[in-house]
Length: 269
Ligand SMILES: [Zn+2]
Figure 1 (cartoon, rainbow, N blue to C red):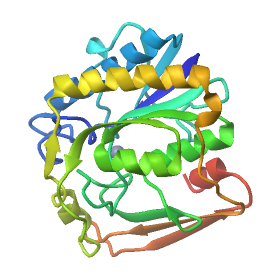
Figure 2 (figure 1 turned 180 degrees about the vertical axis):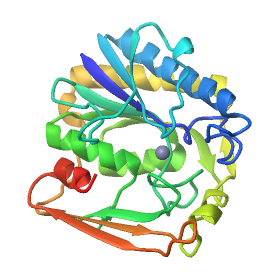
Figure 3 (figure 1 turned 90 degrees about the vertical axis):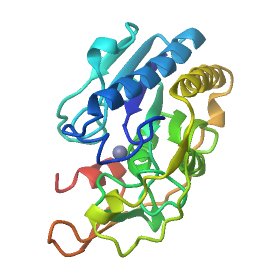
């Protein structure tokens, strides 16, 4: 069994805010990378213990957020530019898709460090259904016939994943405590708006991640049909709405494709 494990940073337990933790010049960036890599290792351990043979970890945070020196020896590390960009090296040779460290999509109430791609995104919707970063990759996986089996990050994200990919095994490692009433915020203010959360101790988060990852692979082995995707009908229409950012006014971009979500995402890249 071959699994892709996509990673992100903002949904990791102990990553407390954006300014101090998620940018390369943030004062705790190195600590954040260690916390993410430890969560990745917990997932890799669970996958491997359940029988996964090959686990490809994709460093999905924009500037990169894995510490290769700390990575579990059973994992492969994928990092670099793909052409086309989407779906970051995922193809039909993978049996399953998964993610860890993920945060919820822009505008999600009671999530933490909420955004989609960047804090300049107000919303991204496919056929009227708002998706986040998980949805972008998961719907590529759907098109390739690869099931999404495991989704970990903050609690609001776990709900988002369950809605888009029913049956996916989720693990929540922190819980945002603020509603989302910030549609009129610009990117700078939104990055600073959703920074309140209750975190699991990272050591406890790793226990739950290992167990969830183990259960996801076992479920895949015994009942692969239990992993589902929400239905979307063709043609596909993608609507991106942005917030004001660095003096740029908000904008709305609409793209359509008759039958390929992957080609739709790549259009214009
Ligand atoms: Zn992200």
